[in-house]
Image 1 (tube, rainbow, N blue to C red):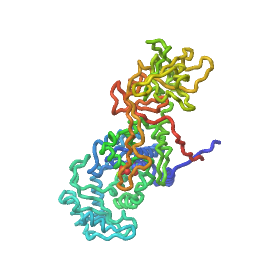
Image 2: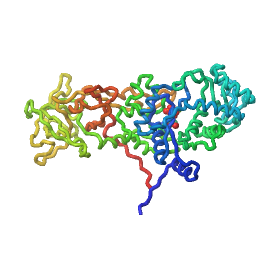
Image 3: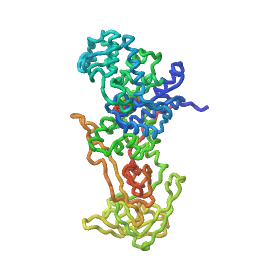
Image 4: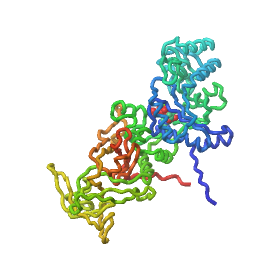
Length: 559
Ligand code: ATP
Ligand code: MG
């Protein structure tokens, strides 16, 4: 009998228990972004986690804009969020919601609290409220307005809604317990006056609910059963449960917290990414050096690679930081067999084959991916003059250098054996041209007589090659210093994270590559056509990731 391997994470275990005990009969999860920026890799984790749970339990997944704060939200962000979530593969068809659509119901919920004597209008200033709140070790002090009658509160709250009071002059507060050891329970503000237009509701409202009041109600209104969020909301859970129960729901959604995803030496906070965009350090929210979903997509990451990454990360209650190399591992692994392996020379010098017929171009048949026959074959032109990488020739080679140097023979990948016979330098003393002779009997790169060569180098035929731009990326952050500068909270940005190479030569077929097409450029890494910078017939290639890494997958728990 096959042994069943069951290793359920702590979230699944809680859901299993709820279903077993009949607390809920089905599962409904959600991803609730605030449309105040682009989504990043941390959000991807939350999206795929929530979507995956809904799918696994045959339940429903909602995408809900948590758009209750009119100050920072923008349509641009709303559009980007939808396309990012869809691209990741989380299907929210028919399940798209706006928290702002609940403003009326939230208002009614607040009135319910007032009628139960559980909320009051307070005239203290923001600063006074703060100083009355107390500290972790000292209880808070009750507001002098706490004893207002229900009638007075109802009247004032309605007038707040009608626009009779200026911003900041009055708030509605829950009446809970100023002595609670949990500061969130000390009569938190639940509504404020703000004469602001909202991107979704326009000028319909001049009072807006606070996050801690709105958020649990949104989940309750939608029948969310499992409200999965990050650890910083753990202390808010008692307040969320209080709000939902006092408003009249029997069973608040079960909130389960997990640790945020952080990547070592990578900027993930929305606020910081925004700063990089505003300061022009990057060319937009989708700059390929960022880890927004839009950036990862532009860089050439696939939804599958991000799904795999999230799966490998797992969920945890303990805060930790994941190595960026794991993300790189995932995209390499995903593209390895999927994309063609082609030749591109990023730092070219000329190689002239002096015994090859002048003017002749022949076509060689090469497999698109040696490890995946189903990608088929292609023809590549070969001629007398080629481009090779500058680093593949050395005038005076060190030991163990097996590439081209005077007198040495190497294999031109998929083509012929060539033997170096000489070289020429330009006026600055740099190598300009290398000369060689070829062995016609070694066609296809096969040894004609059993003689061996130790080096294989790639090339493109000069006459037919296309000149293109390639962009190489390094970490934006100076890894020696870490992301944040301790003194002033600024970021430690290194100046050389982008290298633009305009004089690269690629196989002619690559001139037709379309945005988001990906390739392995042999020996140089995986590259993707940059959707923002490319023009028809003029692709710009960005390096997704180099081929090699010292990264090892962490040991996976085995059962
Ligand atoms: P940031 O901290 O980057 O500004 P946020 O938490 O303010 O993000 P929201 O739009 O409020 O962004 O988040 C939507 C959802 O994504 C929330 O449920 C939040 O807990 C989750 N989330 C945000 N950052 C991460 C992260 N790094 N890892 C996992 N989940 C995250
Ligand atoms: Mg937030």
